[in-house]
Amino acid sequence: MGLYRRTKRRKDGTTRKSRVWWMSYVVNGKQHCESTGTTNKRLAERIRNKRLGEVAEGRFRLPPSKAPRLEPFCQEFLDSVRHPNTKKRYASSMANLRAHFGNSRLSEIGPEGIDKFMAARLADKVRAATVNRDLAVLRHMLNIAERKRLISSTPFREVTMLEERKERRQPHILNFKEEAKLLAVAPDFIRALAILILDTGLRSGKEALALRWNEIDFTDSTIRIRSTKTPAGFRLARMTKRCTAELLGWKKNLGPEFSEFVFANPNHPGTNLKNVRRAWPKALKAAGLDYFWVYDLRHTHASRLAAANVSPIFIAQMIGHSSPNILSTYAKANEESQRLAICKLDALLEAQCVQSENQGPQTIQ
Image (cartoon, rainbow, N blue to C red; front, side, top):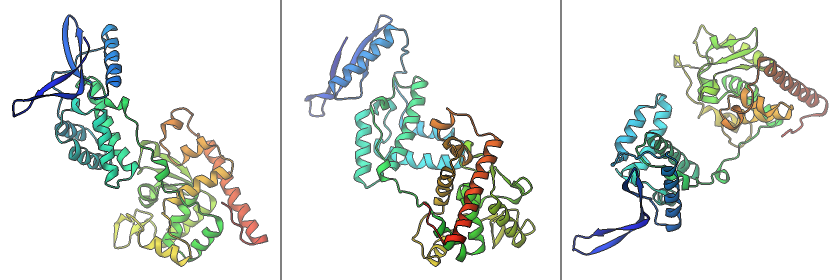
């Protein structure tokens, strides 16, 4: 029982030692051999000691002699994904994984192979965040394979994901002076969209642009979010007084009689606008502002709630944040907490308006 390297025979008849360490151990009186998946002897010893511990404690069940190959397992995994957008995202990562690993068996994908995959992707000038998305899909699949005993263990216990925070684009937090410039020159639908996101924190595409009139309760100043990105996004969003007034004004121009969608496609009223890629840059240019994403208005909303001393836990819940580090630990915001939070935001907006009238425009970050 120990570590060894397999001898491989070449076509010319000569032999050579494999660089990968293999381990042998006894289960129920029978000897079994298994690749550690690494060329590092010290790491191989740790893997072997872990396996011996599992055998001694009766926790180890032998996987099938032949693990499934990557391509059919990818397809099987992809078929189990229900959400079309998630499936599309996973398919993109799987294409990158297959291009590097080919149709290898899952048991042949080790820590060193994963490290080489990361190095190859980074060499192609791919951002660390994108590489991590590919690795997350592979990790998910290998975790499933381990749970089904198709492989002995996942190699990701020995893999460190790439650091991506330094590469992340910093959002532009709109101050009140910039907001005033933008709203003064923006077309009516851009103005309505901007105020909606600024005062509710809705996601621009999946929530704001997809919003229907029957999802808005003007009496209670609430929006029922039914079309969203994640399960945490299905929620009741409360509107400020400004947002309610703005949408009521927009409703008079293009209300339910024109389309069921708040932001309908003018050429096809039965559908909603998918994006504002042309109108948004034009509005920013007209306001004399540097370009930033519409999504940054959502960041601005969260920042303003924080400035109004709203609890970060309630902020995360109110904007439909799906971070498990927060939502799985703390209680969800109840209706009264959300109502109080919006009241605080209303007070902040009204105070800023009074200050602007008395002292002129002030920049609040």
